[in-house]
Image (cartoon, rainbow, N blue to C red; front, side, top):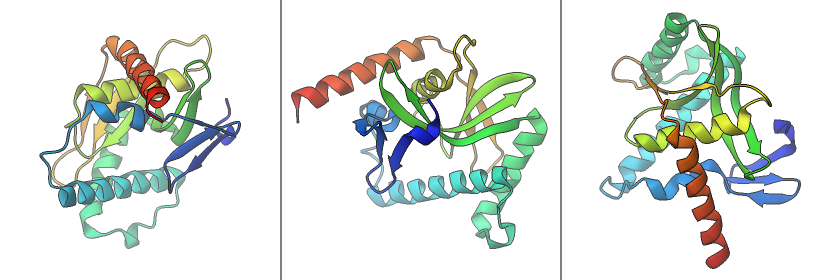
Length: 196
């Protein structure tokens, strides 16, 4: 499905396909993480910084980044992003792409589709790898929804970009991530039916 056919409302974080609201990857996996020990104010700052990092990368990929306008804390993040591209030879062919899986009927926005060392890869940008194995399920969901028909699965990576320290490229290769995501999706849909 063309990503232009997937409507997204940022204010409500709602994906609509052919006029019908469909569940999205973040909501489907939300029950798999627990950040209750982290103060809400700290979580909100982390969320806002995560949004800024994603937007910076998106603009840099598009060639529209105003580097002079970047806040100081983002400058080392940009440096690490570009170092990752140089080190791996990554060529980005899609950034912030909306995807939809017609059989499983879920949607989401994958961060990056790249070619690294001649192979297709799905890369999710993170400021933290705290979510652990859930990241693998998230990447599996995006990979499954974006995989061209008849093609082999793409490699899956999380790219940690943080203002303090070097980038970290973490591979996720556990094939169970796919089934685990589909299980979470089934639970999410069942819960929606039972609790209006």
